[in-house]
Amino acid sequence: MAGDDRLTAREAADRAKVAPQTIRRWLRSQRLKGERAEGRRQGWRVSATELDRFLESGPALGPEPRAPQGGTMTGYERSREG
Image (tube, rainbow, N blue to C red; front, side, top):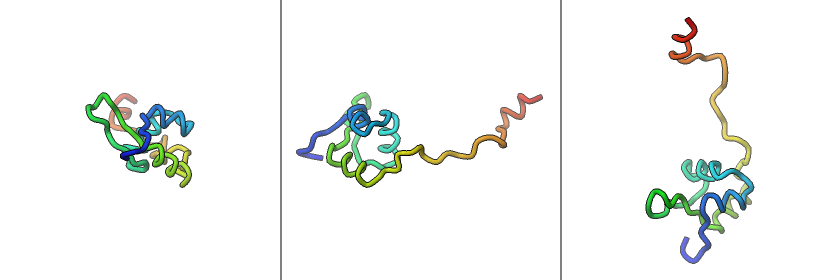
């Protein structure tokens, strides 16, 4: 990412019109390439060029697939049911 503008997760989210959490999720899942800045509190950095490439390729902006909801109770829920 040398020589390229680096964006924070918040800046990338503003540019992509998504929540910062979505950018972080894409980074953690490696759908979007980026790197952790030095020090945990510094967060992620994303190349502006990489973000543009990712967005142009159609990152499936909809919500990520989730496990089916309902119908399956956890052990804790069963124990509370009485």
